[in-house]
Structures are given as C-alpha cells and as structure tokens.
Image (cartoon, helix red, strand yellow):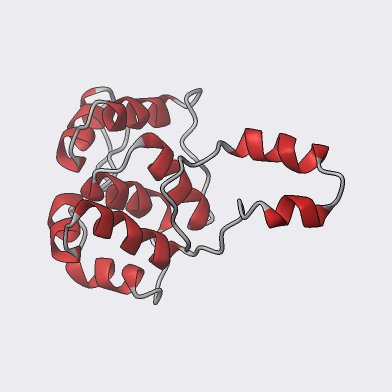
Amino acid sequence: MTTTNSPEHLTEDLLKRLLSSTSIDVYLDEEETVDCNLPVYLRSLIDARDIKRSDVARQSGLNPTVVYDIFAGKSKPGRNHAIMLALGIGCTLRETQRLLRLDGMAELWCKNRRDAIIIWCIKNGMSRACTDDELYRLGESTLLGTAPLR
C-alpha cells in the first residue's frame, strides 16, 4: 500500500473523477487506486499508532492467536471480530468502515440500531469493553456474543 502525505479522497469524489475522465488511463495515472488487503491495512494502522499486535489483542478482547492469524492473513475475522479489532486499534469510523470492506463484511449502517450504537461508541472513542456495555445496556447483543436480557 502506497502512502502519501496528501489526504485520502472520499470514494464518492473518486467515482465522480473516474466517471468524468476521458479515458481510464487518465484516471489510473492519478494514482488514486490502491492495492491493499486486510493484513496490510491492519499493519499500517498499528504502525501509524506505534502499537503492537499484543496491545490490539488485549484491547480488543480477542484471543492473541486469533489476532496473530488475522494479521498474518491465515484467517478472516468476520464482522464482530473486525469491529473488535478496530476498537482495539482505536480506529476512526472511516478506518473501521474500510477494515470491514477489506474483510468483505457489510459496513456499519446508521439505520441499524445495533450498528448505530457501535458507530456512536467509535465516534466517542469508547473501548471494546465500554462498547459491549452500551450494547448490552441498550438490549443488543454484544460483540463478544452475549445476548441481552429481555
């Protein structure tokens, strides 16, 4: 993954530029496309924050072996584990959405009650444990899979 000092463009902006390009070559020459997979993206996130995979495992609540396998590309996390990784890394909402896309999972959607709670928690810098507490308090299943009391 190539990184530059320029800010990342929104996908909607890039789509407009692609559709208005006179040829695909013009668009591709702008070097806005990236070849990135989930392990590469995860490593770039922890490198940017100067944290270790062991820190991610501890903060996410995931088994360290699971975290190391995901970072090595040996397994895919699935949606809840991807969100837990994002929370363990301290990702922004945009970073979390990209992480979910790279995992092949649906992005968080504000029209979904559970997703809206998670979005709010991410936006407010809450930990994975605090996010699970909020989900449980509001009657939604937690990221760890605990069903709420009804």
